[in-house]
Image (tube, rainbow, N blue to C red; front, top):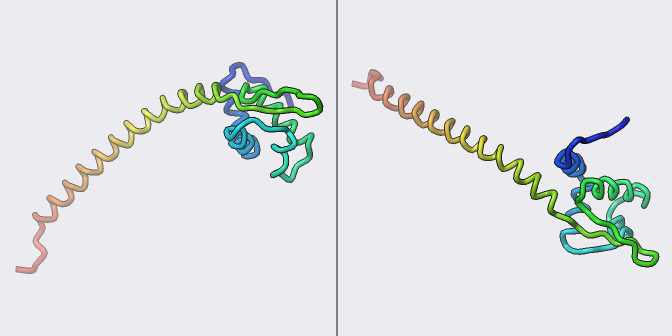
Length: 124
């Protein structure tokens, strides 16, 4: 299957969709490390980790450098800012919707409570 994304934001969201890749990014947020050190916590082959790293690198989330026999990786968080900004726009939308729902529920409860006083409960 061919995977083609017309925009970098799609690549970022695609890369972030996998829990292994998110764990790799969380580790790299602590500082630069080698591919071997990144692979250690996962029950996965080095080629498997390398595929995850390739996805992260294609999305611009990491950079790999070769130092002698070692390949070191470091985080590039810039593309995550673009994703965060995109999500923020929808966060504002949902907050407005939830505020509207809260106002509606408040009115409904007040209306129901006011109607309780109008009913004859037969206690007189």
